[in-house]
Length: 433
Image (spheres, rainbow, N blue to C red):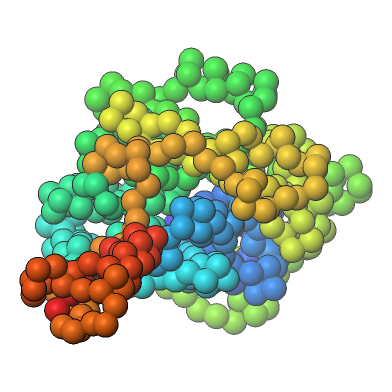
């Protein structure tokens, strides 16, 4: 409501909202008032410029985040994942995009664990119930797309349930890297082995100088602990400059900042919101055009939009949380895929997404193992595969029972079967009868 009341004053552009839920609501009003609305956090893939022409995402859409996760899953040879997320537009639509990306790679989401928006952090019954369900399933690859407070509780409860041990794979979306960079309190033990992603921002003198100024003047938490600078702080800074440069260009081109009465909104009545006070920004379309033609070097790197309004050169850092902090294991970019060198090294070369060119550094997985988990276990309540072995066989070298044993068998056929099972990406409990 505060954001809507703010729009009662004459505004030429809006930075925000923070969430995709509010973006869907406010974008309709921005369209009516022809006021450009820019957000670096509401990155819902379904916020289409066709539906919301005055809404601009100034950071890469979560579509690219989900594409990066899907390529990681393919890289490690996994086929099915579990998605754990909140029941809100951004989380839900992000998981839908992940499912589409996985389907293109012949993978899929085997189970969607949905948490209510009002999950009680002090008594997380819904979280525990969903984790217990997941623990009894085959897939051990879990993608967590949620809010920071909910995410922290998920991992704390997962540790209590023994789900941060060897065999599990946890992939957290950018909410976790933001917490790590912000230097906020975290139960690090419950996060050991988790892989998360962070929007990649190339190293530059401008970025280093800004980080130095932040370090000198950074705010304090109530515990006297300083707040770290996360990547969204850099995108916020660039977003302000995008608007400033567009307004400057508009004025230098002879444009004005004028407003007119909106008859459509005036005919509506609202108790908390004075709709008749809202004015249409006459130069809104022109300012939006200047915004979309932005071409500058920002703290986040080159700032530029494609014709479909997607950000130029979307890329991510891939991070592994370990006991003493976190370390970077590689990068993903829409141009070059997975690599262990910064993606800007490839932009001057033709795109090469062949599997032989996809690389990541070794990961310390949950349980402290460096061996890539298979990603699959036999369901707790599942039945073992039972294989019948003939009692009388003409060719003993092919298959036979050992000394008349009822369950010990040998032979060429048995050896081939056991070798094939070892090649699978998941275990197959079985018995010979």
